[in-house]
Length: 358
Image 1 (cartoon, one colour):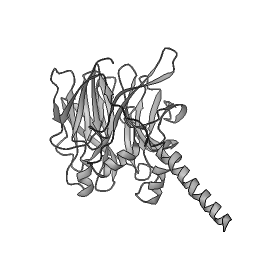
Image 2: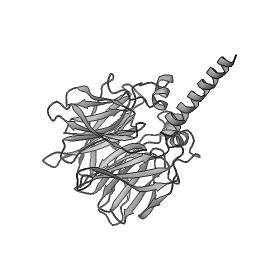
Image 3: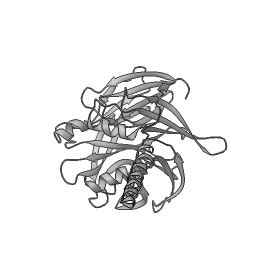
Image 4: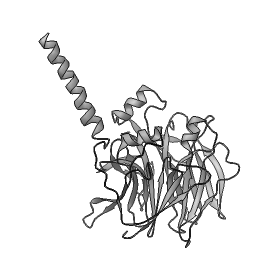
């Protein structure tokens, strides 16, 4: 009897230790949140939809492209509200939002986005689209021409692109796209993947003709972006709480991991500014974000990290923005000169910020 009691106590202790040290601490459950930001913040409402999940800025013009979709409404009533692409010209003295979604886009629920400018100055916007019809996931390719988006094509791969999250263009018709889960369907497998931080997500590469997997063993592959010289790829591992840096083979597209930046937070989308600095929207308390996703009454802290190389060539991380959930679920931060836009997975607004000290 004593032996059974001892075994039982050891089992309970092991489960408690695993939950405490393996799930709660890595998820930031006990992290202290001390809100701060050096600058001004203005909240700009999205009248037509919600969820400005990803933002990217054209460094030449200062035009910010914003991907938005009302995820909560569409979960309750699938496909009832179409998503949109907005722009905001940060070069304007009083920038405002404008919906530039083409009228013929149809079944459109945008997620991650990326802008590519070719040597002749033509600009192409790549958008992850989660559709109601088959195929459920595609990359929409647009050209930005004469202040308008022109839809060019929908690119798909039902076998490899099963849970796409973010995209980064590396050519007029070439891109990398993250698959944030190894399990494509909701269920116990996917739940365990998330809570056990299983590193089984991956990155696909489309070379203009076909897809192939070029990086794997990632714990929730989320945001992805390209270095200023186009030789490296940055991938956010959300539940892994780090950014993985890969060398990129320019001919084959194959990625080779070379470095990891530990962040101790749930990293989401990555933007790279004109100086090569990384700006990352983050979820410092991941379980609170899960709770916020289920119910808007539950707030989730928002965080922005600035990651840059110091004079010795080492990456340094600086927390430039943190709040306690007044603006919940920050997923992206994009910077142009002294202006910063912060977006969210679910909020019906975005934050327009002026940086006092960039």
